[in-house]
Image (cartoon, rainbow, N blue to C red; front, side, top):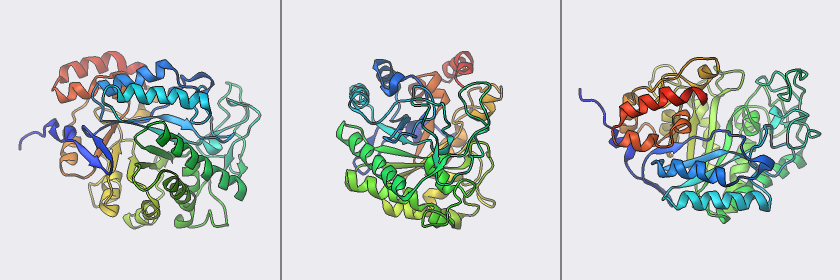
Length: 380
C-alpha cells in the first residue's frame, strides 16, 4: 500500500464565505503576553509569522469577553474596550497582509477563577453552581495559596449578561475584520461547566439532563448568530475531557453526542472544533472514528480535529516531563483523505516553529525533526 501524501492537508476548502488555502489550523494557545489585556505589536508579529509560514486559518489564544470574572490568568488579552480592539485590528491587518485568515477565540474561565487573580483580585469566580471545579485544586496566585473556593452561582440576570457579552464580542470581531469567531466551550471553562454534570447542579432550565445543560451554549450561539448574521463563520470548540478529569465523557455514546451537539448546530454553529488529547484515539467502542469524525458523521457539518498532530506525545504528558518528538503524519493524512474531518488544528508544533506548515508542504521532514528536537522542550 502506498504511503499517504501531504496533498490532502493542502487542499483548499470553502466553508460559507470562508475560503482557506489549506486544512492547517493554528490551535488556540494561551500566551499571557498582553499586559493590561491589550495585544501589542509583538502579538501581531507572532500571528503574522504563522500566517506567512503557511497556516490556512489562525485561531487566536483565548480572549476574554466583557465580564468581571472572565479572566483567570495573567496578561491574557481582552476582547473588549477600545484599546484592546484597536490592538486586535492591527493583528488582523498583519495576518491579512500576508494572505492569512484569523478568528479570535472568545473565552470566559468561569469557576477556574479565584480571588486574587488578575486583572482585579477582588472579583470571585462565577459558575453555573457554587461548586469547586474538580480541575482546580487551589488558587493559582502563589505557592502558598489556599484551597480553591467555590464560585458564585450565576443568576438569571448574570446569564443574560454573559450571553449578551459573547454576542457583543462576536459583533466586534466582525466589525474589525476578523474572518469568524470561535467560542471556547471546552476543557472545563464556563461554557463547558454548564455541559459538565460535576459543575452544573442547577435544577432550573439551565441544568438537568444533557439537553438542558447544553441550553446555555445554545443560547450563546443563537445570540451570536443574531449579532453577526447568517453567513459569518462561528466555531464551537468542545471537549469530552476536562482539567483534572482527562478520561471524562460528557457523551458516552454517539446518540448522546447527537443530543448534546444537534441543538448547537441548529442554533447556528458553522464548524465544530473537537478537542482531544490524541487525535488517533477512537471516541466510542466499535469504531475507529475520533471525536471529530463522529461529530461530522452525526451532524454533517465541517469539523476540526486536534490532539498531538505531528508529535509523539500529548501536551499533558509534556507537562509531566515527557519529551515530544516529531512524529509521522501518515495516520492523520489517511483519515483526512477519507474526509473523516475537514481541518487539522496544530498546537505545539506551530508554537515552536512558525514555518511548520510550509515545511510539511515541501517535504522538509528532516528540518522539522531537527527543529522540533531543538526547540519544543521550551514549549510544553
